[in-house]
Every structure is written in C-alpha cells, then in structure tokens.
Length: 338
Ligand SMILES: [Zn+2]
Image (cartoon, rainbow, N blue to C red):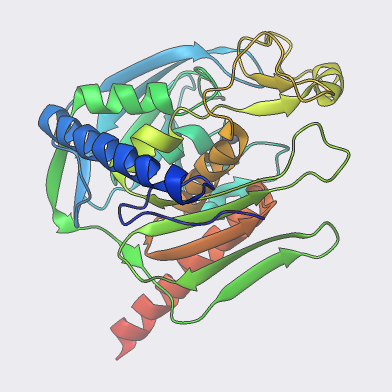
C-alpha cells in the first residue's frame, strides 16, 4: 500500500505504527527546523515570491553522463525575467539555447534541447537544482554538448549555487496554477502524470515508480512538498540509476562507456547495488521526482499545485511542462486583449 502522508512541513513520514510514528515525527521536525535554520543562516535561502539569481558565478566541471566528454560549466548571474539560458561557448557563434520546453528534441533517457543550430544534452539535473533552489534567472555557459554528470544527482550543482549565494531581484516570480485536474497519459504502457489544483503555494510531487513484477527494483511511492530546504535535504542527493541488464545495450549504443558502478547506481538482478550504496532505501523514487522537477521547469514557470505521476518519464514530463506553459501563455494573451 503506497504511503503518501506528509507532515505539516511537507516531510514524508514512512509507514509506521503509532509508537513508531511519534518519534519519527519528532525527529523529522527537529531535523527540519535545524536544517532550515542553518540553511537560512548560511545562505539566506528560503521560499521567495521575488525572482532570484546567483550573487556571483559558480563553476562545475566533469565528464557528461552519456558521452563522457569533459565539460566546464559556468553559472552566471542574469537580469530579471531572463529565465535560464544555455550558451555553448565551445562553438564559434556562442549560440544560446533557452531552457524552454518548446526547444526539446527527442532523446532517450535524458532531456535534450536544441536551438540556433546547437544542442545541449542531459539538462534535467541542473534544471532541477535551479528550480529546487528557486533560481529564476541564470546564463549557463557550457564548453561541450552535454552537462557534467557530477555524481549522478543534483547535489554538486546545488552546493556550487549556494556557495556562490543568491540575490533577490525586484520582479515577482512567474507562477501558475490551475482550476481543474489535468491528466496526460500513455495508455500503451500505463504511464500517466496529472496536475491537481493545490492547497498551498508550493509544488507538491507524488510519484509512483513501478517497473513491474519482473524488475529487480520493487515499486516505490513517495510524496514531498518542494521547498528549497526540503529539496536540499531530501531530493538533491538522489542519483541516477540503471538496471545491470540495460547497461550492456546502452554501452553497445556508445553511451556511458566511461562509467563504473561507483559513478551511478546500478541494480543487479537480485536487487542489490553494484559497487555502491544507496543514500536512502527509496533513492530511485526520489531521483524520479528530481528529474520531474527539472523537466517541469522547462515550462518557464513555477507551478503551484500537486503533480501526481505514475511511472512518468521525461517524455510525459515534457508534455506536462508544455501544457502548463500553454495555459499560462493563453491567460497572459487574454489578459492583454481585455
Ligand atoms: Zn535523472
């Protein structure tokens, strides 16, 4: 039975009997309060209605996840209402690729954007870090077509952003909400994602990972309110994962040949992890939420409401980002015409 309960602070509460629940709540509240206090003192970060950008540039470097090519990435402060823009500084014309769902092109197991004759691959983990920490405006300079894989999570991106610091800007954040539930589904494989009107200002994501009875990975369900504090403590550290049975085919196709079991989470047939240890027992479902946040950020908006996803991957996430972007653009057009 999936457990979807949330504490008042939005923290997931594992299934437990009464005597197990009380200490869990107390410990989680203690940890949340301390973490929030420390994070605010160190960085000034918390939810904000104003747009934000980096206080100074941040640099991260390393090989990409799929192609293994070294990439130097610089996150630069940007003016309000810029949004997130990738800039390929390794190409002569230094083409820019806006981080918007309209520039998504088909790509297996990752998000690829293409504009102005250039592409940028595996954008979802950095986009997730920026959205999770509520960074609205940033120019992302990259020296190769694929972003650094770092440790397969978004935590190193987050740490670099927080070390650079964040500045509040004058303009308000672009936020959208909906009045009716909307579901997007792929009936052929049972995948779906829906957005539901929210009861708070924050985004809440509820995800069910389920690869079926034959999978070495048992189904996992988790829900969380996506505030910057909870993003840092509960989501950012979750890493990319793959099944050992899939690795051979991926490497035969030329992907990830530089990777070992220490670079990402690889599940063996019996459910064990090769050369690595999970950071949380439900790390995979946390990573699916991390990916979902990064893909939805391509709407260029902050969604205030609940996202419920069942086995949704990048493709359905992009359709949902497009839906959110379209309804907000239509509202703006109607507002202008009135
Ligand atoms: Zn991912």
